[in-house]
Image 1 (cartoon, helix red, strand yellow):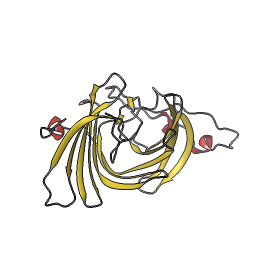
Image 2: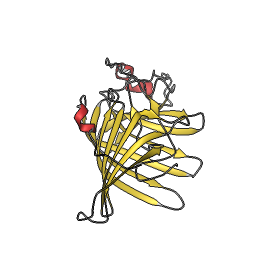
Image 3: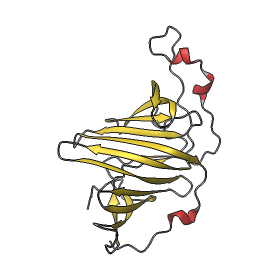
Length: 223
C-alpha cells in the first residue's frame, strides 16, 4: 500500500555513493563568472556534497487540498543507507526511519514511523510500510549523478550566500538544491506534478559528521 504522511511524497531520491573526498569547484570561480548576464559567465561543474550530516529543518508542503508545516531534526547517513527524521506538528511528535537499503521493486522505501498523538500522554504507535520519502538520502554524488544545472547564487535566510542547482528527476520532476561553501546541502524544494504539490525544505544548525549506527535503532513496528 502506498501511503503519504508528513515528510513523505511521491518523490524517491536514491542518488548516493560513499565517496569521502569533497571538492567544490564553484569556490574556485570568481563570483562575476557566476552571474547569469555576465559576459564571463560559464556553467560550473556540479560539486560533490558532504552527505553525512545532522541538522534542524523546517518543511512546508502544500497543494489544493492541504498546507502542512513541520519542524524537527534530521540525520542523513549514506554509510548506513538511512535517514531519520524527528518532527513536531500540530500536537504530534513523530519519527520516521527511512531504510534506503530496503527498496521494493517499484522503488518504494521502507519507513518505520513512530508517533505520539494527539497529546504527549497518548500511547506511542509504531507502524512500518513502504513509501516514497520527501526526505532523500543525500550522498556525495546527489548532484553529479543527476547532471545538475547551475541556477545561480542565492541568499539563504539561515546559511547566508549559497549556490543553487537544479535537476530534472525521473525526467519530469524539477528539484532545486541549495549548497553551502563546504559542500553541505542547506535545503531543497520541488514540484510534484502528479498531485500539483509544492515542497520547500530548509536546513539550519548543520553539523557535518558521520552518524553513529545506534542513532538508527528503532522499536519493533507492526506492518
